[in-house]
Length: 400
Image (cartoon, helix red, strand yellow):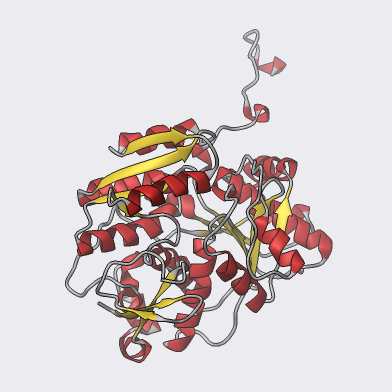
């Protein structure tokens, strides 16, 4: 394995990367560590340029054992696109969006689950369970099917129906339960303790993070080996934000970039904003958010196991945590579709709303290069009434 060991994200205690792990003995996520000096010798800008595209070309900084094939459904390098008219409406320029909806199963969950399921197969795990608000469950089910691993998914009752049926279509056993995603996670944890399955909850195994961090590798290469001034990221469990922060450090260690870093903006909805509350209060850990509710179901996470890692990355980057209203989320989705022909998912609408809020507060400059993450295809979500067609009456086009 390229990974030399696993490390507790809180205590820095080391764990054997050749063994199966969930959380550390301190109850915190484990982080994969690598031989960075060895990686530096082979992972160069020139070597990356001639490798086949996709997430697996970063092999020196991924945990997959040498000579072992990944569980892959064709993970593409997702494009970075300008939102020129959207930016101009706010008197700004240099607004970009990275569209993770182009990935298998239509969301950025594919990156993390491709890596995590690959490692599960490598370790011989036969049965996996996870809680989900939607897209993670679909990705787990798809990659589990490709790997021949049985998957069990438990969803809150408010999970969009399309996500539930998509997950079931891939052959997973899908259960709908009362409560929020952390309540579903408690059921998964209870079953894992009884030996019924392996717990694949967010950050409760080490390798989903390693797949998600590829977003950081990829965006730097796409931006000619530079980083944006600021990244706006929809934050529920926060795996991608934590992963990208880890990726930037690893890239510097192997000589692909220097010490420059983007400011990381953790974006949440006003109806579920535990990270924002903790950030504003100067706390290291976040309290559970009661009564979580938002149309952006992917960030409806009342309690994140990696809360201190999210807050650490935001503070180290000199970023902030922002909460946006439901109205601002819906308006953002509608505006970008009309102005730039790009259909954001609700979580993508949240990050655009946060960029607008940051502009108003002077937290981001109008000419700064800002990168938004659209974490899933907008076509997977119900649209507003404003998107309904008009009724045609008569046959004369002049009346239209």
